[in-house]
Length: 118
Length: 107
Image (cartoon, rainbow over all chains, first blue to last red; front, side, top):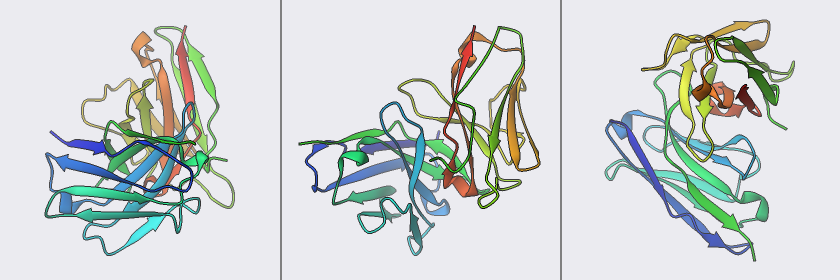
């Protein structure tokens, strides 16, 4: 069974930093691109970043470029998202998601809540 | 502003059919072939229901179907059931574009 479990969400002050983790199981992690997608309270899904199978290539949304960094550890089956320079508008549930073998996303974690507030 | 446009709401009665559209822009069209649809219940993670325009994900009933025509992808749910009441999102470009979501109400 494919499982993705996020952790690391917290209440953080504006300008602060945080690292989110996503531990996966039930599939060959190193064979899949991985994504982070966020959802602000009461709002829709917004793609944040993606990383290729060996971590060589990454891509992120313009709204987080230069502030958020996606990475992965294939030996540990963990996906990361380093968040810095946090703003109130970054408040959201952050989902870890698996890239499907055809372009797109097929499985999602349960999400972890990041709240940016003073 | 979401990259893909969906109606904010849709509704139908049990047993009826409903279709939800997903439209790109001329500068950022819906990517033919690789459109996905997701179902999300309140407080829960999204779940994949349709991928590659019309393929149903494992375990998804055939009441759910997808199609594409002229820069618009569509999700049709036939034989509506009360537990179909949820938010539905389209996505394209390898998961990097999402629609704004459609709240489906089953009356």
